[in-house]
Image (cartoon, rainbow, N blue to C red; front, side, top):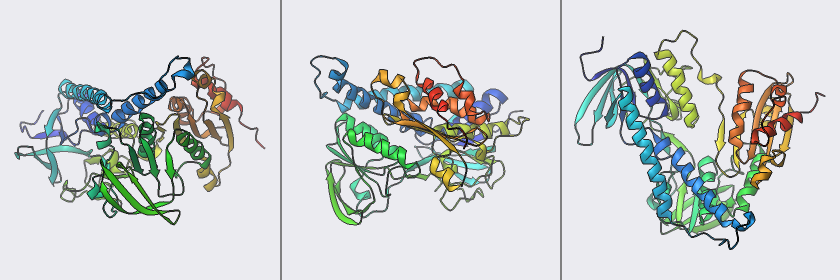
Amino acid sequence: MASADPNHFDVLVLGSGEAGKYIAWTLASQAGKRCAVIERRWLGGSCPTIACLPSKNVVHTANVIHEASQGQFYGILNSPGKVDLSMTVVRERKREMVTGLVDMHADKFKEFGVELVWGQGRFVEKKSIEVVGKDGEKRILTGDKIVVSTGSRARIDDISGLKAANPLTHIEILELDVLPSHLIILGGGYIGLEFAQAMRRLGAEVTVLERNARLLKKEDEDIVAALEEVLKNDGVKILTSTTITSVTGQSGTSVTLNGTCSNSPFTITGSHILCATGRLPNTANIGLEEAGITLTPQGYISTDEHLETSSPDVYAVGDCAGSPNFTHIAYDDFRIVSSILLGQPQPPNRKSDRQVPFTLYTTPELAHVGLREHEAVSKALKYRIAKMPMAGFLKTRTLGNTAGFAKALIADDDTILGFTALGLGAGELLPVVQLAMKKGLNYEDVRDLVITHPTLSEGLVGLFSSVPMMG
């Protein structure tokens, strides 16, 4: 029987991000649970509003403009070579998409009967959250089950003058109405590299400053070298082994960074700074201590294999729980928690058992799942490697971009240990390989598929046909 208390819910979710919203929608629609979601600003979380989808919108625009500037390559006579750009139009195209996504989310909350409560939420007891609305009005909500889905935010390093320079993060750069004359990006990770190429293709001068000896330190050296060549060919300047000691000026006008590069002093001046050096969990000032919820040393909410916190019946999902910072992993967090809350009879999934695929949306894309080659070496695992240039994926020849290569690690029992591809549409190759890996199939099962010609996936037949015989 439903509670007579309008402030009590079967399931109460703090944060409307990917995992949290789907838990509420599913419990309400499939189990008839009374659910509410507390959100302070971004309806649907960061992915549809300020992160994944908006950034890919801008990346696509940048690629279209780049292709237009290459018109003569495609036989377009009188191609201008340089395309005039309106950043206002770029921004409005992105905003229009976001508005549509926000409207879609609002409709979903209504469709599933989930109450959306706007305001800043903070635990005041183990099962109670105080919500302060924009007007200052307070409301105490309670729940039989509570889910924390507060996400993460961009980290701005503690460098002298950096915060005072008002640097861009992934949020502000998507709201620019002018093209930076020279964008300096701190960080050579996923976010930094996607924006580096996109802004360069839109026409900005771009310099990436990476503190480590190379970009994407977790990836294999051959992959990073190939991607770095692509970015440099686009005109992106890359400086590694850098340490920034001070920043002066204002991002948006003129800003100067001082530090060292490979232990030698250097100074660089640009018009804008983008901070892309990592993320921090949104776990402060939400009363976790009042709820008896413990944190990891890195500040993430500590959870067990099924994402339950140290406070019984309170779960944490997504970035704030230390899950890999991908929307598809947050969606898998939803699967884990919802299966428990729905009381499904089969053993629930475990966070340590899942695959963690990813795609970096540069052009060409970098896609990966499973073990990397250097990881297999460090574990002293026996493996064979199949490697094929993307030119062997014949669809890339029709598209006019054969840069990159694909490789797969094969175990002694012929199962697939890992797969990495740098190439056009590489992310679309992942599901076939992932399914084979999840089901423990041999690589021959992929090799022997009849795959439509000419598609990118067809290249997997050639890749897995090149697996060396066991020595």
